[in-house]
Image 1 (tube, rainbow, N blue to C red):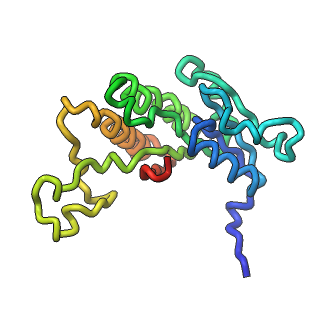
Image 2 (cartoon, rainbow, N blue to C red):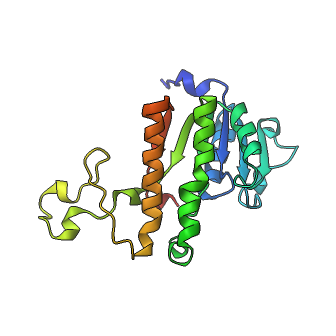
Length: 208
């Protein structure tokens, strides 16, 4: 017998920031096809990946809105969308390794500075924030520094015990992981200090 989680069957409104990207587009399709939820999606890029989900003729048309906008330049529009939602999923960020070297400043701003409005609005409006981070926040394993690889604590990645050691500042490749780790710490601090309800997803590379 199949049992359904009552919380999953309730009508909800989800705001997906970065809805037109790889993860966002798949999340959107999963939600609107399988749940009776409303989705408020925004992205600065054209909705190429979600084009087949748009259109007034779609059965879920009344449950999905797409807003093409720059959240950095239009923070009040972002706040208005968050105010309407029960939950906010933040996927907006530069997540391309080739860009970490070419655009380190933009990478840091995209993953840390530009994420703060979304976080602050969730704090102010008391919304549940689901923030997508990365497995790269774990940094280098202790075994990579020469410690005994036979001891699993030197290579096993654990959210509570891994020391999260990054590379040198001169290695620009680490700017992405450092920015992601710092924004995680900011979110955790808001949870401790301001009661923010949050979930952090450390997505591995195989998820995009």
